[in-house]
Amino acid sequence: MSNKANNTLKQKKNRAVIRLVISIFVLLGLLLNGQLVLSLFFLLVLFVFNELFLADHNFYDPSDDYQYSFNQAEKVKPDWAADGQSIHASWAKGSYDTALLAININHSFKGKFLDPFVTITSGSITRKQYFERSVGGLRYLNISEFINTGEAIVFAYSHCESEANGSEVLLFSNETLTDKKVLIIAPHADDAEIGAFGLYSTYDSAIVTVTAGEIGAAAYESAYSNGEQASLQKGRLRSWDSIAIPQWAGLKPDDVIQLGYFCMRLEAMHNAPDEVIASKTAGVNDTRVFREFNRQSLKSDAHGTSSWNSLVADLVECIERIKPDVIVTSHAELDPHSDHYYSTLALQQALAISSNQPANIYFCANHLSSSDMFPFGPVHTLASLWPNTNACVEAGTVVSIPLTIEQQKNKAAALAMMHDLQTPLRWKKKLRFKLQSWLIGRELSPYGEDEYLRIAIRDNELFFSVPCSEFMQSMKSDSNA
Image 1 (spheres, one colour):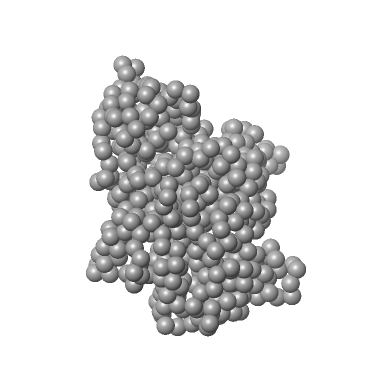
Image 2 (image 1 turned 90 degrees about the vertical axis):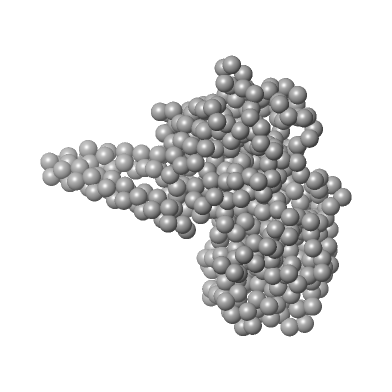
């Protein structure tokens, strides 16, 4: 986490401490005056207020600008109508597939307490995009579906307003994935579904899942005599998920591979590339334990060595067998989860060895350090650029892939089948979501309790795209730094 993010988090904690101290003094004053009933009522009001308005897990200042640069974008000054609420196309129709409107968004008074959003309409298409509460800075509206309607794009804001001055349309033209082979590097079972289900269920795709995801098996321990057995069972179930669910979505059995490395161990493997690194929780050090459902065999099946060098060799073998035109992986800056970061690093090293080079690398981000609520708002709304208020990120080319309602429902079904997303919410979080639904109108997901069944079910999936050569050059730059 950057110094700026650390400072923001520290300020948030300091404000929480101040609120707690003030609340304790008020409560003590009430108790000393014999006001027991009033004290209980005060505690109830404090709890409800906190759950409604102070429990959002956004670890940055919402008044900061999102920090991105777009060297590959065609930048156009929008042709605003006199009322500043609509723009007319000033670009060639059919020349672009993805577009963002860079514009300052400022919350209204209600937008401190209710979720701000914009309703975007053009022709017969209407979409909504939500923002964080207290938004006040540069944001990016995803207008990709509207740029080729030939009609004005109209914006209607709720609990916020925009500043038309200084706004800019960013246009991107991406090569179609039709007749291309796509390879998704998924750090865990469910990562391919969260970030790219619409993509992989639409285009000719393959998925390589790096780890079994066996840690965090408390929900299974009641059925087993020890934690290692529970962890093994969880790893086997998630390995099955990584193989079976993509096939349910239409992938061929030979196009889904589970490598069976161990959850939260990739960093240790990287730091000692020749050493065998065992699972933290399952009591095993052989990757073959979690490869039992693979249709295809790998050269490393002969030994099952759980080492960094073995992982890189496995990825080289998969790349040369699948021969992808595009590889999808986690963005190393926006998605700093350890297994996600090191999966991308292993991919870089594999591509440095492989004789097969894809044309482009697509980046997604499932685990953000800035927020665990993004995309904001309910299901079936737009996703745009991830919150990033720290160091500026070069976005390359932005790719927005639209999903039909049927595709979104299939994505929800795929995620609901994932064993790791079936654990019931803790009572406090469940109560928080219920209170927010009842009192401030935050919609609950109709597809299940887990937050990914809200976060991931969107009108589109978003990726950054860079040429493979640029991706490889970034590895050289990092190693020389």
